[in-house]
Length: 320
Image (cartoon, rainbow, N blue to C red; front, side):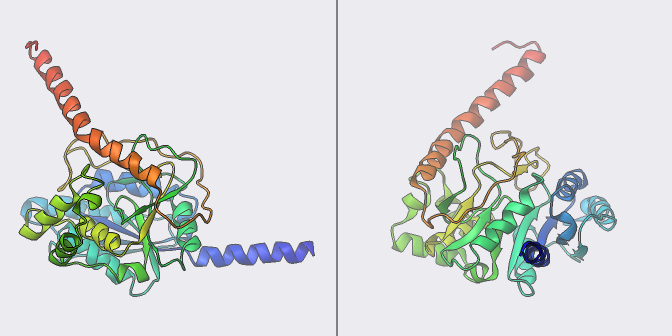
């Protein structure tokens, strides 16, 4: 009996390792950051059994060509994964097109995927949490996304659900990605017709609808706000961890879409996060905590800016 039990456990372990979601990584020209991202990922418990697929965007102009080539050269020599596949774009796709095309391409051959950008440092338990959650909720069509990051100050004992989707170290299934509406106009129109802007914006605490409107006019090209809106309008949910397994290291003013700030900084979880089956419903307590964080976000940014400005002026002999 004991031998049968051990044999069964070994079979289940082998099956689980063969069924791991591939990691889809998007890179451009920031070698130092992508190196940190890869090195953290290599320390993950499941990295040696995980397929890594990297989409390297092409240079926008001649000024970026050297940096893009440096990134590609570095990535062509990495190891520590079951396999590494590089897709090198022959022109500049831009972040939005690169991600949408890349995720869609991977999901033609897989039923699930884990997605990272080149400025995401992960906990060594990131891959385990993402795969556990993908497997636990694989048949629950009301769950659209698994997320690895949670804002500072969010306090929960276990993972929780919120309506919509998110974009800093995330995972999804083909069934969910197939519902992604790329047309911002369609999304904006439906939100307006259903009078959902206030709720969509977390009761006015964060300007998601403004971001979507700017998407229409070409002021931004955010794929993430369209992904959030698509899942929100489908009444589907994202599972968030109670402690963050992802840290965004790109807020150093080096990225195309990020400015310098530390208001999103967190400490990575140094222990595994248990994924249990919980009720598939939005946590109103978590939603309130997100609202509180969003409402104080702008205040904290202004305070930090003033503090930094005072420091610079003081160093120059000017006292405020």
